[in-house]
Image 1 (cartoon, one colour):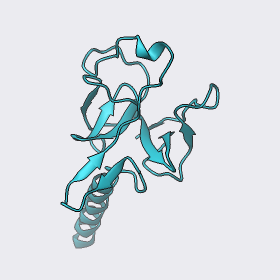
Image 2: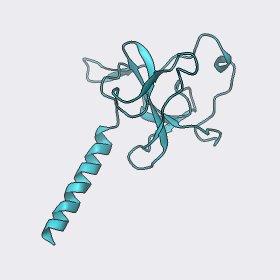
Image 3: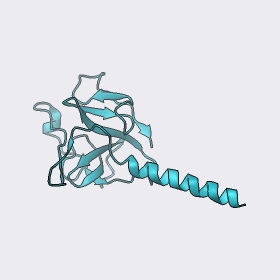
Image 4: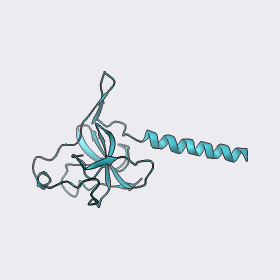
Length: 142
């Protein structure tokens, strides 16, 4: 009985620590630590041309979002957004680690904005601004 309790405690510790440690993507250039102890966060820019500049974004609370949630580091921390650009109203607090959803991770690596399948630059990542079909992301329920 004692070993079962220890096993359950060990599993809870591993699950709890993995959810907390995966709240960011190691190597994400969009998040820079400042000497003062704070951080500077950059979000993906809107394309200079195209229909996205003239369309109203889908608000996170509107129920109009049918695709995977985009996990984006913002000045407010990790957020679930309906788009990679994290425009005002398109994001909500992260439920990662508590709710299973289809997700993509928006990161900046080597100066390029990517959508990654997992919070890991070694997972399947595609360039946000590539021409279709090269920009079609690989989401995953997580």
